[in-house]
Image (tube, rainbow over all chains, first blue to last red; front, side, top):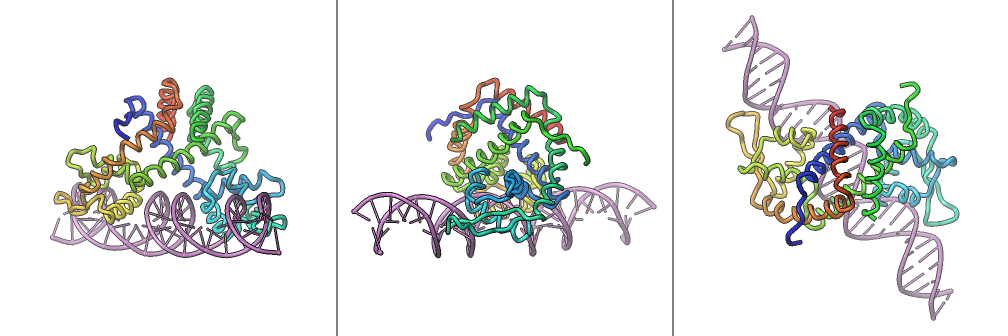
Length: 150
Length: 150
DNA sequence: GCCATGTAGATGATGTGTCATCTACTGGTG
DNA sequence: CACCAGTAGATGACACATCATCTACATGGC
């Protein structure tokens, strides 16, 4: 790792601003969601993915693949959500090792109640300040970076 | 919060990609830093700010202002870093309530050792895939969003 | 059928972030 | 001086993330 290629002035400004933005944005979104609906962003993501299937249930490994979370993170998260009554675990008959995660009625109510305020906050804090061109440029940029992340 | 303004297709794609990118990027950076130098991103940020001052010391409230962290987050972080010998706390004579955080010799060695690999990773995972125009567009976008965040 | 290897998922330890709350000192006003 | 609002910082409880490790079942080769 000799002679690292340091960031130039533009890159450094962009990087610092990016880090700062993402930290503050995440904090604000988390706070709003938590305060208004008692859900964390993690809860929200899990519930969104569950409601995307009309059966409201998934195998944990599918959820893991979709969310791109660590397996144990997901497992712990589900345990906490189960304790709070947002999801339920069910046995999987096809595969003795496996399980299903099922959204509960309470989970459905929670996500239904939380979604409008959350989306509104995302819009207000993020998209309302951007032009259409910036949005498409962002889409492009994130896709490019994601490619490199493999 | 009736009739929320939902995100349109472009916005939704951009938002999902952004979330995914930031999650994966942060995870990768954290892992690299942790594996190669035993520091977390949080440690790194604190140490960078300390080395920015040639005395290598700051009042916690300055650090808080610069990093824009929650006060208690910083306090816990400093406690952990102190336990690991990266920083030291000193009394502040001017203000009886206050304190100083001082980087230790070990902290200096840690940041010096960690920086090249970290910067290299940022470059490799992020900037190497982007054009100069994308970098300046990002700088602009993050600045715009930060404005709205107040 | 038996074994090796792989896959699904859970768990405990530890580090990290947030909230609520606490202590102690400062500095201005009467 | 006495009081009190404000500020600097620490702390305990709890949610969250990661790592290492563990159990149990699946599956393919012999």
